[in-house]
Image (cartoon, rainbow, N blue to C red):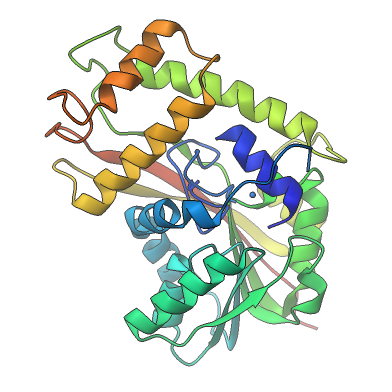
Length: 319
């Protein structure tokens, strides 16, 4: 991902994931992703250090990726697939498994994450290529593809329409672009935690929305736009633009990977929302993160994952 996108992800908190493959509990992707999915000054975000959390995020959110792949399979028989902002390659490996005859390439700016993607492909015995490239500057060098997937990366670029234009330019005639943006904020716990003031998640949502708005405004060459993604895809010259949302519903009790992802995501929220939330809410987060507390994330039997991810899909007209 571009340096500016990396810093934007740090400021916002995917994942997130991530912009790397799908990422976080927040409606925009959350602190675990990636923003997505990833400058505007300051230190670069260390995506390599986030690899474990990004991989856990990708595995936790696998249900929506599987559903989206099934729908995409009805639209295109791809010979070449690009996952732009792939991170550690969780989604890319799923595409490789679903389309074994296709050439699937995981594209990311961080070599450590691409190494994780290659290791994952070997572990799951799927055929996956990797390519280091910046988003959006390096896209033109990738060549045409029949299916381009990009999860929670576009909103890290100041000019989102330009980013979509560049992604659309990667498509071969008749090719399909699928962009993951938006959805619903994630929920992991009951409204009343049994301590503190009920409604912590809603207050965190508000704080994250305010941070996200500041992040977008501070991006280099930031362009305000109505985030009507199908309309933006049509403006990029694509046809048949539509959106579909997919549910991720993992009831309690969570498996260890999902529990680890929730914990890592809440840790990130605690770090980036310090100064944004009231002291009583920060104290609630501290208690949730206390491994010795029976009411903490590590011990609670009622921890779950519930969210929705929205995929925006359109096609390049056949020549």
